[in-house]
Image (tube, rainbow, N blue to C red):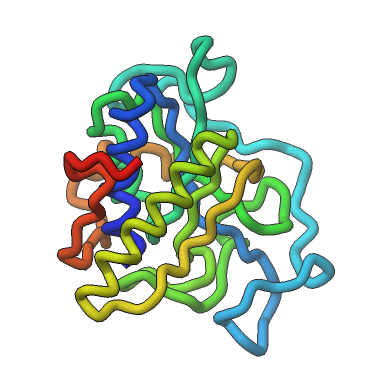
Amino acid sequence: MALSRKRLTFSQFFSQTQTVWFLLLSVSLAATDSMADKTQLPSRDRCLKGREEKMVVADKHAVNGNPTVEPFPEGMETIMFGLGCFWGAERLFWQLPGVFSTQVGYAGGFTPNPNYQEVCSGMRQQNDRGTQYRSAIYTSNPTQQDLALKSKVAFQQELDKKGYGPITTEILEGQQFYYAEDHHQQYLKKVPKGYCGLKGTGVSCPIGAGKDEL
């Protein structure tokens, strides 16, 4: 449900702002030890300590050659989307007009600079299980936040018509992004036949479908 909504809404973000976007993709972080309820995020005091050292990644995008680390060209904006496994999600976005660069990583939790093995729990999107796969939009400014919230309202109306439940996507401004390991970056360019779990609902969001709701 959230997957289809985000795919269509994001294309509207690009066309409406007429800005070349630098895009960050993120799965949400739940780094912890054994948990009684794998569908709940751990509290801060139960999370792993993490580390100060940042993940080292290639400084050029494997697909388009653009920078993947700061500094980025002046006037660009960043935004994070969580929609299940980040391999297929990143490929979806690097193909969109107006996207300057994409990276995958972790956000939405308490552990600084986690690694892949430390990001684990039990929710799911399709075959992707764990709270790290929950649906999220993390914006970087008030304009993005407003667009994301309006898209949620518009898409929920369409989902209601088809009998779907409420959208559970977490929409927050100003979250910290931590890079994933370098082999995860642009993974489906490096491994073209690798896993991709992207699927939709068959319901289109009116924002991004050629209408003028905003």
